[in-house]
Structure formats: C-alpha cells, structure tokens
Image (cartoon, rainbow, N blue to C red; front, side, top):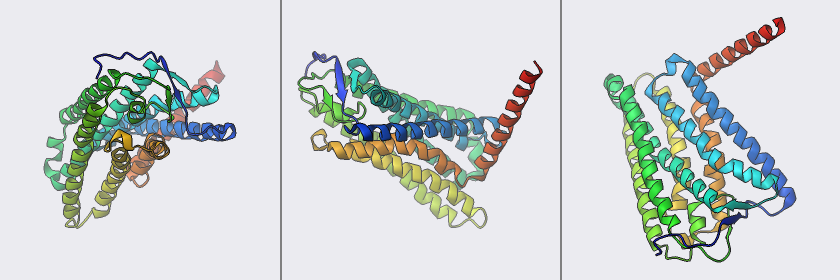
Length: 320
C-alpha cells in the first residue's frame, strides 16, 4: 500500500439514484421534502426540550443530542445531492468527497455509541430508580456525550486516513448518491485488505458490541417491567421507542459495514443507504414523540410561546 495518495483524480462522479431526467425531478422534490421535515422535526424536538424545564432530565438530554446528530448526519449528504440534481451536475471534488466521508462516518459512529448510552439511561431509570438522579447526573450525561464524540472522532479519523492513503485510478465514477466509504474503496487500485480488516473491526467495536449490550440491557429491563404493578405501559412505551430506533439504525449499518467490500451490490447499497441516511433521521423524532405525553405537552407549550412571540412582534411593527 502506498504511503501517500498518488492519484491524479481531482474529482469524482456521483451517479445518484437515477439517470432518468423526469424521475430526477421527483427524487429532488421527495428528498427535499424529507430533508426539510427531518430538520424541522428534530429542531422542534430540541427546542421543546430546551424550553420545558420538566424535560431537563438525562433521557431528553440524550434525545436532544440524537436530534442534533440526525440534523448534521443528513446535512452532510442531502444538500450536495440536491444541488447536483438541481444543476444537472454529478461531480464532487476530491477534497469535498473525503470531507463528506469523514463527517458522515463521524456522525454515524458517534450515534452508535450514543444509542448505547441511551439504553443504559433507560436501564438505570427502570432497574435502579432510587439512585437514578445520582447516577445519571449532569456530569455523567456530559461525560457520556463527550465519550461518544471522542470515540466517533478517533475511529472516523483512522478510517479516513486509511482511505486517503490509497491510490485511485481509472474511472472516477461512484455508483452512489454520496461518497460512502465502501463505494469509494471500489475505485482503489491499491490493496484494500487492511481497510476491510479495519472496517470489520470497527463494525464489531461500534455495531455488534454496543448492539449486544443494548439487547442485554433491554432483556433485563423487560423482566423488571413485567414485575411493575403501576406505570408498566409508560415504561414499556418509552423503551419500545428507543429499541425501534436502535433496530432501524444498527440493522441498516450492519448490513453495510459488516461485510467485505468486494461483496457489495450497488443497487442494494443505495436502497439501504436511502433508508438510514434519509428515512431514519426523519422517523426518529416521530418515533420518540408519537406516544410521549411529556413531549406532546412541551411541543404545545412551544407552539403557544412561538405564537405569542410572533403576535407581539407584529403588534410592535404595526405600532411603529
């Protein structure tokens, strides 16, 4: 393997989801709608948690950070995708492609660890409620968030370095709608066996191990819930929201990153990528707020506050 990148390629071509011009217009409208919904939904959730003091607990602190990650996650990918469709251009510069890979990996890997900490939070809340406020204090929560970001940063930096030092040659065409690691590696002329090993090792560290720990936590949680005489439905509903998000996220990520590069299927990969980069971030705030009365109350309070503020603003302008 080369010690540094010797490629003469200074851009890549992203084929996108379709070559049909009429279908591309539909894709543009659908993806733009989903993206705006994703940003609006997650921002509303963050604002609702911020303004309602009753939601200033560790569960909603983690949820706010998950929403922030989802906004960043989609923003790394979708705006460039929409721009390429709108201007009928499929090119992306070499440096922009690698930045997209890095931040995409950073957000995704950070979210893997964050979901595991969210499961631990629910485990303490249900299995050890008397000590919950002591264990899950603000210092503990900030530490867990920091650990998630640090691990995500370290692992993604290793991944992008190993990709960057490869030599690329031949066609610059990437059969994908964004610069995803496995799709980019298919263009490498250098030996990618080390990349395969590191990707499988990283997948084990950030996907399988946290996922197994989450499953063990929830088995214990459900056994405790079955013994609860009152409040069983609320506890079960909260846990099901989180485990639904976990299955959606870890399931899609596992089938993408827990297999050798040469066994990838471009059509299949794009279908899976649409699901975990576009659909899942939009669904997360809906899943967490759909049956959560506390979030409903906070959103109503936020709506009233925004209405009163806008009304006062227009009244002041009218007087002026």
